[in-house]
Image (cartoon, rainbow, N blue to C red; front, top):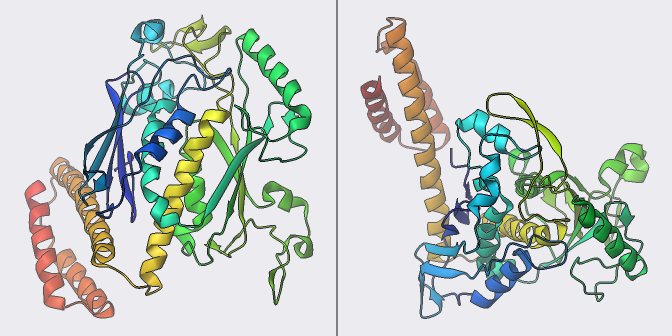
Length: 433
């Protein structure tokens, strides 16, 4: 299962740990001849990196992007692009006292239960530092997004909520309400002095999004956006349009009625049936407080002993300002995927690279499915050996082949072609058993 890859029509694979050598990403399916947007990517990383504001981690990282492959004389070559950021201010010693215990609300406990090992140095792969890769990768899809505009900002930090939105009011928190900004800063200063942290709610508004993006049932646009946003470590919830407020509305109040000029309202946030309507795309997500705090907390060790501990590392009082460029990056990746797929099914004018991108993705899906099938075949073989069952089952194989031939007719595929492929697959499976 490729859980470190995000791919459908625009594919990326990320790697690296918080206190390892580096963080990086391999990007495939980038068209050749595109000007590599180095400055845009670096600017986005500068907004995400630690030390960007008074309430962020004091870890001193430059986060300078380096291009290892796929770019020649400033342009993409069509080959896989590898981008990397080296960790320069990692301090393993800051986490030595954590090597045998699980930090509350971190991934330590769950990673250990799954893998029987975990990197205690700042969370390893579960660290927010992993998001460097996402931000870097998103810089390559600007040409796909064209006129789409993404506005993203907090509407709630702790007990403070915005009462107005003035996008011209620039500050380190991206807080667009002048009326209570000074009070918010004082509030955050008090939380920082306590050694504590705070979360909040971020709102997203996407303008100029075309209708028709997203697909029925399992590939809905809102479902894919939700997965992308929830894949960010500190995010714990998401809502579209009026979200949870819809629960208190009657049907006639919650419906997005229409007239000849378009939609009268936008209660559903620009998505109906999982497909964009052309209305402004609106959603909000919840960010939890940073769980690393300089306050004594209770937890357990690997040996299930109860202990008390206090974090001594460099942590964010409020992670929201640094999450904003990460969330924006994930939105870009999801929309780029949806736009690329829509271009295919809308019979728009396509280039050879467009067709190749689509078929390469299908080929990858086939390989992933074959890999999973192979592992299951090994488990079946082990089960048969343990229970002294015969390896071959001719009746089942014949029924399977007949069923596959029927499906081949349905999909207008040559039956003999399907039969030959499955003969090879079944033969290979028997070797594994």
